[in-house]
Length: 390
Image 1 (cartoon, rainbow, N blue to C red):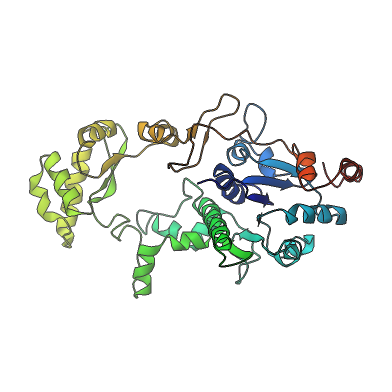
Image 2: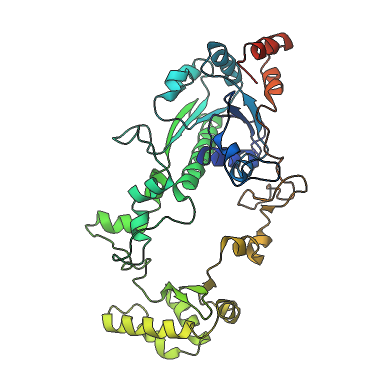
């Protein structure tokens, strides 16, 4: 899985777009991060910071990229960007709809300079619809998509923010997938260039397949009542001794059988998939009492070798040091840069032994990238004097 030879011009900032291009960079693409000549990517300056004074989020999703500082509001800056576009394969932007047209870097304009370009627009709500121009963040997107409602234990409990930015990350992941798919389509001769309209809300809606199927069939899934939101005692989260929690996900009969046998409660096997409310309540009470007898780690140790679909609920710090996550090999701990979560897949052509280069300083590669595009030293000096590049 090597995208060597693919050049991506990255106009995004903060988290979703940079995560998309980080995935492409981890897969071997040459990602050129195009920043403005003032503050650059805002994430550079957002706490907490690395020991080098760089925002940790910026560092995490900009490894192995090259940074160019370019003023796209100036005509000379636009013309310079067009020269970069001529040899690029992909442009990804994350502005609100309409901004790229004002800057002269929209799909239609850039296609005049490179008709084979894959152009991806990534925004909160997409390029059309009544919310297209609306500002938002992850909490807004998961709220609109229905995820926030179903994530609460019951209707009496108010929704609360999720622990991870699901919409941001899902949107970035889907944008990367769409870009790679478009590049493959171009390589196969099915298309030339292609325009991609990706949003941060739509993938979260796509994640709703089980709930959506019920809605589209005329139902109305409610929190705490569906099979996957606490409606089933055999698929839920239980508190253990000393305050820890475990997950029990014995949806299939064989997992429930394994759980009951491993805990010496064969008498509970017959209640799997019962729809009798009294039996469900009694079963939940039995399970709550059972799990309260041991700590989380004691339950994980006792049932870890069984086909019982039981595991622990871990903090982020515990998760990143968990033996299973460590064994997968994508937590990078390079000597010259802070640790980070790397490319989350393994394969015969994925090298987790070579961490990506550190995140670039703002404008570190401006001259290098402009030379690659064919600009001579005199022209680069003129652009610097005009403060179009930095």
